[in-house]
Image (cartoon, rainbow, N blue to C red; front, side, top):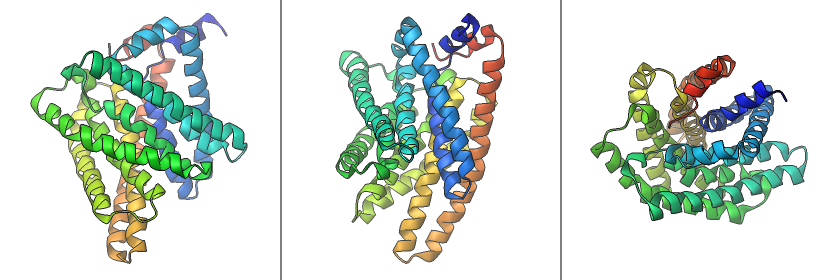
Length: 322
């Protein structure tokens, strides 16, 4: 590897990780529509990106430590393990050991990350300025393992993670809403507000995936939270796109993608209960979500590609939130 390429790896923006979590989730949606090649290509590209981050962490530990000491960037580093879980769900169809190993390792590393993040940012020192929706990436991102864990044959683990995630979401949500109302969100992290759509969607999908006799009231609460969060995100879109592109745009990607999966799950659930008209309405909502999400993720990925092909100085400018 030449020095120029290595330097590019050092300056890879952390938010590319959650962006690819969104792209992978969207590719799973397209596979469900019959477009399996989209999933294959996205998984292969994500594998390369994931390996690039491993090289970055191993070759530039000081850069990694500096980024990980930043609360916002640290919370987004959870995307690394979320990609592992998603890749595990893909590669298990080719090799059970590799697939399950990636999935389980992702869970373990994510758990360690949660403990370290909690100690640094809650126990040791809490800063309301950095208490942002990106925290949900750390605390609820582990639920990706339950979303894609069907082939792993580890229902007990998935159930535990599901209930942990629901409990965590319910605990954090009121404090997060209060913080967003009372204190201004800085421009550099403004797009993190979009992440509010992710945890409720993860909770809903994981719950319906792992619980045989789900509580309809809990399902109702979670999907109402999904719809409110989706409405909030759409309402904020004009403001989001009025801000010059930066890695913080990644905040819109995975939440929109997992929101599609949540609506799909609700549509199937309503249909199983005999509410065909409500299921039909939800299916139409899914259509709008796919339409909008595809545009957003494609735009963010294209901008990251342009950034990667740009000058080294520009890459440094866009590196992340300092």
